[in-house]
Length: 112
Length: 115
Image (cartoon, rainbow over all chains, first blue to last red; front, side):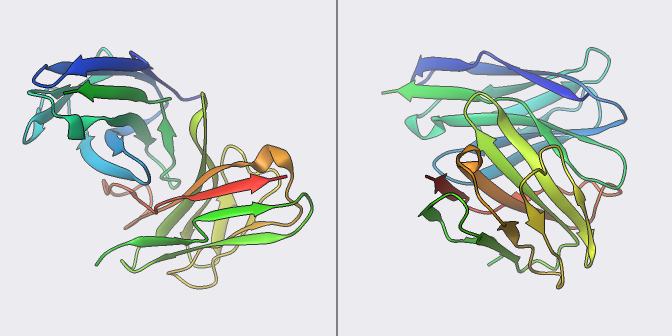
Protein backbone atom coordinates (compact mmCIF):
# COMPACT_ATOMS: atom_id res chain seq x y z
CA UNK A 1 0.00 0.00 0.00
CA UNK A 2 1.32 3.43 -0.94
CA UNK A 3 2.29 5.61 1.99
CA UNK A 4 3.12 9.30 2.36
CA UNK A 5 4.28 10.74 5.69
CA UNK A 6 4.65 14.44 6.30
CA UNK A 7 6.41 16.12 9.19
CA UNK A 8 6.00 18.02 11.33
CA UNK A 9 2.20 17.87 11.48
CA UNK A 10 2.03 21.51 12.52
CA UNK A 11 4.39 24.40 12.83
CA UNK A 12 4.19 27.95 14.18
CA UNK A 13 6.76 30.51 13.08
CA UNK A 14 7.18 34.27 12.96
CA UNK A 15 7.23 36.37 9.85
CA UNK A 16 10.63 36.35 8.24
CA UNK A 17 11.56 32.88 9.44
CA UNK A 18 12.61 30.12 7.05
CA UNK A 19 10.76 26.81 7.26
CA UNK A 20 11.42 23.34 5.90
CA UNK A 21 8.56 20.93 5.43
CA UNK A 22 9.28 17.24 5.02
CA UNK A 23 7.65 14.47 3.04
CA UNK A 24 8.73 10.84 2.88
CA UNK A 25 7.06 8.20 0.78
CA UNK A 26 6.81 4.53 -0.07
CA UNK A 27 5.10 3.84 -3.36
CA UNK A 28 5.16 1.16 -5.99
CA UNK A 29 6.04 2.43 -9.46
CA UNK A 30 6.72 6.02 -8.48
CA UNK A 31 6.15 8.64 -11.16
CA UNK A 32 6.24 12.00 -9.41
CA UNK A 33 5.73 13.88 -6.16
CA UNK A 34 3.55 16.93 -5.89
CA UNK A 35 3.19 19.73 -3.37
CA UNK A 36 -0.07 21.59 -2.91
CA UNK A 37 -1.04 24.53 -0.72
CA UNK A 38 -4.50 24.47 0.84
CA UNK A 39 -5.95 27.57 2.39
CA UNK A 40 -9.67 27.73 2.97
CA UNK A 41 -10.75 25.79 -0.06
CA UNK A 42 -9.17 24.00 -3.01
CA UNK A 43 -5.63 22.65 -2.86
CA UNK A 44 -3.59 24.75 -5.27
CA UNK A 45 -0.67 23.25 -7.13
CA UNK A 46 2.84 24.32 -6.17
CA UNK A 47 5.38 21.89 -7.61
CA UNK A 48 5.68 18.59 -9.39
CA UNK A 49 9.00 16.75 -8.92
CA UNK A 50 10.03 13.83 -11.04
CA UNK A 51 13.81 13.79 -11.04
CA UNK A 52 16.18 13.64 -8.10
CA UNK A 53 18.35 16.59 -7.20
CA UNK A 54 16.71 19.18 -9.42
CA UNK A 55 15.41 22.07 -7.38
CA UNK A 56 12.17 23.68 -8.39
CA UNK A 57 11.72 27.28 -7.36
CA UNK A 58 8.91 29.78 -7.34
CA UNK A 59 9.57 33.03 -5.55
CA UNK A 60 10.28 32.27 -1.91
CA UNK A 61 9.28 28.62 -2.26
CA UNK A 62 11.54 25.85 -3.42
CA UNK A 63 11.43 22.08 -3.40
CA UNK A 64 13.69 19.16 -4.14
CA UNK A 65 13.29 15.41 -4.43
CA UNK A 66 15.61 12.59 -3.36
CA UNK A 67 14.47 9.40 -5.08
CA UNK A 68 17.16 7.31 -3.44
CA UNK A 69 16.14 8.23 0.10
CA UNK A 70 12.46 8.58 -0.87
CA UNK A 71 11.78 12.04 0.44
CA UNK A 72 11.18 15.61 -0.55
CA UNK A 73 11.42 18.95 1.20
CA UNK A 74 9.57 22.18 0.65
CA UNK A 75 11.39 25.32 1.78
CA UNK A 76 9.80 28.67 2.37
CA UNK A 77 12.12 31.60 3.03
CA UNK A 78 11.18 34.98 4.54
CA UNK A 79 7.76 33.65 5.53
CA UNK A 80 4.72 35.94 5.45
CA UNK A 81 1.33 35.64 7.12
CA UNK A 82 -0.10 34.74 3.72
CA UNK A 83 1.95 31.55 3.79
CA UNK A 84 -0.27 30.26 6.59
CA UNK A 85 -1.97 27.18 5.15
CA UNK A 86 -1.96 23.41 5.06
CA UNK A 87 0.78 22.06 2.82
CA UNK A 88 -0.03 18.75 1.19
CA UNK A 89 2.42 16.30 -0.28
CA UNK A 90 1.17 13.65 -2.70
CA UNK A 91 2.72 10.95 -4.84
CA UNK A 92 1.62 9.83 -8.25
CA UNK A 93 2.37 6.35 -9.51
CA UNK A 94 2.74 5.18 -13.09
CA UNK A 95 -0.21 3.46 -14.69
CA UNK A 96 -3.63 4.36 -15.90
CA UNK A 97 -5.07 5.73 -12.67
CA UNK A 98 -3.57 9.12 -11.88
CA UNK A 99 -4.50 8.63 -8.26
CA UNK A 100 -2.73 10.94 -5.89
CA UNK A 101 -1.85 9.40 -2.53
CA UNK A 102 -1.73 12.23 -0.04
CA UNK A 103 0.00 12.72 3.25
CA UNK A 104 -2.01 14.15 6.13
CA UNK A 105 -0.69 17.63 5.56
CA UNK A 106 1.39 20.12 7.53
CA UNK A 107 -0.40 23.06 9.12
CA UNK A 108 1.82 26.12 8.97
CA UNK A 109 0.93 29.22 10.98
CA UNK A 110 2.96 32.35 10.40
CA UNK A 111 2.54 34.98 13.11
CA UNK A 112 3.17 38.69 12.52
CA UNK B 1 -10.79 31.03 -16.92
CA UNK B 2 -9.70 27.42 -16.51
CA UNK B 3 -11.49 25.88 -13.59
CA UNK B 4 -13.15 22.93 -11.91
CA UNK B 5 -16.60 23.83 -10.61
CA UNK B 6 -18.44 21.90 -7.92
CA UNK B 7 -22.00 22.36 -6.75
CA UNK B 8 -23.31 22.72 -4.17
CA UNK B 9 -20.56 24.18 -2.01
CA UNK B 10 -22.38 23.29 1.18
CA UNK B 11 -25.19 20.85 1.91
CA UNK B 12 -26.87 19.66 5.07
CA UNK B 13 -29.22 16.76 4.55
CA UNK B 14 -30.65 13.70 6.29
CA UNK B 15 -29.79 10.03 6.20
CA UNK B 16 -31.19 8.17 3.20
CA UNK B 17 -32.07 11.14 1.02
CA UNK B 18 -30.35 10.73 -2.35
CA UNK B 19 -28.07 13.54 -3.39
CA UNK B 20 -25.79 14.44 -6.27
CA UNK B 21 -22.73 16.65 -6.21
CA UNK B 22 -21.91 17.97 -9.64
CA UNK B 23 -18.44 18.59 -11.03
CA UNK B 24 -17.64 20.30 -14.28
CA UNK B 25 -14.32 21.28 -15.87
CA UNK B 26 -13.72 23.56 -18.83
CA UNK B 27 -10.19 22.45 -19.70
CA UNK B 28 -11.05 19.48 -21.92
CA UNK B 29 -9.34 17.20 -19.41
CA UNK B 30 -9.64 13.47 -19.89
CA UNK B 31 -8.97 12.44 -16.30
CA UNK B 32 -11.32 13.30 -13.45
CA UNK B 33 -11.43 12.11 -9.88
CA UNK B 34 -13.30 12.51 -6.61
CA UNK B 35 -11.61 12.72 -3.20
CA UNK B 36 -12.87 13.10 0.30
CA UNK B 37 -10.92 14.90 2.99
CA UNK B 38 -11.31 13.97 6.65
CA UNK B 39 -9.39 15.20 9.71
CA UNK B 40 -6.45 12.96 10.49
CA UNK B 41 -6.93 10.95 7.29
CA UNK B 42 -6.02 13.41 4.57
CA UNK B 43 -7.45 13.19 1.07
CA UNK B 44 -8.54 9.79 -0.18
CA UNK B 45 -9.70 8.87 -3.66
CA UNK B 46 -13.31 7.72 -4.06
CA UNK B 47 -13.69 7.16 -7.82
CA UNK B 48 -11.90 8.18 -10.95
CA UNK B 49 -12.52 8.35 -14.67
CA UNK B 50 -9.92 8.14 -17.41
CA UNK B 51 -12.31 9.25 -20.12
CA UNK B 52 -15.95 9.28 -21.16
CA UNK B 53 -17.77 6.11 -20.08
CA UNK B 54 -14.64 4.83 -18.28
CA UNK B 55 -14.86 4.90 -14.49
CA UNK B 56 -13.32 2.85 -11.71
CA UNK B 57 -13.14 2.60 -7.95
CA UNK B 58 -10.58 4.39 -5.86
CA UNK B 59 -9.68 3.61 -2.26
CA UNK B 60 -13.00 4.38 -0.56
CA UNK B 61 -15.82 3.80 -3.08
CA UNK B 62 -18.43 2.27 -0.75
CA UNK B 63 -21.69 4.20 -0.72
CA UNK B 64 -20.88 6.27 -3.81
CA UNK B 65 -21.61 6.11 -7.52
CA UNK B 66 -20.32 8.16 -10.42
CA UNK B 67 -20.99 8.56 -14.10
CA UNK B 68 -19.08 10.09 -17.00
CA UNK B 69 -21.45 10.60 -19.91
CA UNK B 70 -19.69 13.73 -21.12
CA UNK B 71 -16.06 14.72 -20.94
CA UNK B 72 -16.64 17.85 -18.89
CA UNK B 73 -18.94 16.44 -16.19
CA UNK B 74 -18.32 13.89 -13.46
CA UNK B 75 -21.13 13.85 -10.88
CA UNK B 76 -20.83 12.08 -7.54
CA UNK B 77 -23.99 10.32 -6.40
CA UNK B 78 -24.87 9.26 -2.88
CA UNK B 79 -27.88 6.98 -3.27
CA UNK B 80 -28.55 6.58 0.45
CA UNK B 81 -26.28 8.93 2.40
CA UNK B 82 -25.22 8.03 5.90
CA UNK B 83 -23.58 10.10 8.66
CA UNK B 84 -20.16 8.55 7.99
CA UNK B 85 -20.21 10.27 4.60
CA UNK B 86 -20.12 13.66 6.29
CA UNK B 87 -16.93 15.09 4.83
CA UNK B 88 -15.30 17.66 2.57
CA UNK B 89 -15.35 16.48 -1.05
CA UNK B 90 -13.07 17.57 -3.87
CA UNK B 91 -13.32 16.96 -7.56
CA UNK B 92 -10.09 17.12 -9.55
CA UNK B 93 -9.10 16.88 -13.19
CA UNK B 94 -5.97 16.61 -15.26
CA UNK B 95 -5.16 16.54 -18.92
CA UNK B 96 -4.55 12.81 -19.27
CA UNK B 97 -4.23 9.82 -17.04
CA UNK B 98 -0.99 8.30 -15.80
CA UNK B 99 1.00 8.63 -19.01
CA UNK B 100 1.50 12.33 -18.52
CA UNK B 101 3.13 14.53 -15.90
CA UNK B 102 0.23 16.91 -15.60
CA UNK B 103 -0.81 18.12 -12.16
CA UNK B 104 -4.38 17.70 -11.05
CA UNK B 105 -6.48 20.82 -10.57
CA UNK B 106 -9.03 20.85 -7.79
CA UNK B 107 -12.47 22.33 -7.39
CA UNK B 108 -13.28 24.49 -4.38
CA UNK B 109 -14.82 21.64 -2.44
CA UNK B 110 -18.26 20.61 -1.23
CA UNK B 111 -18.90 20.32 2.46
CA UNK B 112 -21.54 17.67 3.12
CA UNK B 113 -23.20 17.11 6.47
CA UNK B 114 -25.43 14.04 6.74
CA UNK B 115 -27.62 14.09 9.86
